[in-house]
Image (tube, rainbow, N blue to C red):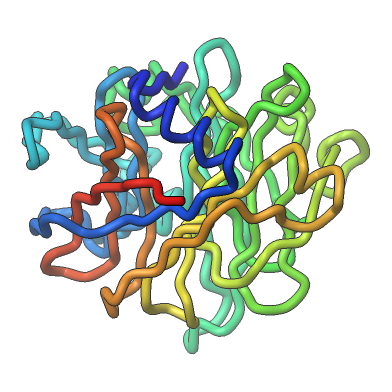
Length: 291
């Protein structure tokens, strides 16, 4: 389970209580190679995993050392018998004691204007042990309930954990919450009992990050299609209650490329963002709260 530094928790509490503006700035950019176009970052028990769409879908493990990420010489491929299964990974939902899900966007035409959204349920521990999906791919689920794209992340709502996902486009975007046990047994997300809650949200959502201690969902977005960074902090419970995103704060940066993923580090008010650029694709960020 993800935990946050106590100082960060206090800052988030202040944001919620005072509805204060949250500011964030990029303090350092570095380049991490061998990922293709990086599609996201997740931190699990202090281990940082970056994933992308190289010649095959790939994930690599890193260690946070001061203001840099050190490669741990561990590479994992989303393949079965060498066949590329998750070419374009778009989010990893991982939580202790619950099924692990990885999103995949499948190109349906050469122009890249039509995509199919797929959620893969995998044996996470087995995947980390063997380095491939051989014997570890449990189920492939058609996300036909989506409007455009899939990006799974675990969130907690009223004491229960759900798998949240969001759309990317600029029309009738939604965040949907799915029952993880029902999802793990489904063949498609439109089946009864899979999607249990949803609310509308703003466009160009690339990924999701959940601050579990305070029920805050971060939409990792672009300001316009495919470029310019935006992080939108939502009150998850209020968003579900009203049926529309309940915004606590929005952080825009002037970085012009395509933001793909973000995670807080657990250190006080520090985060890591990743983009699909070939250079300067990992950025360290500092956050502060004002009145």
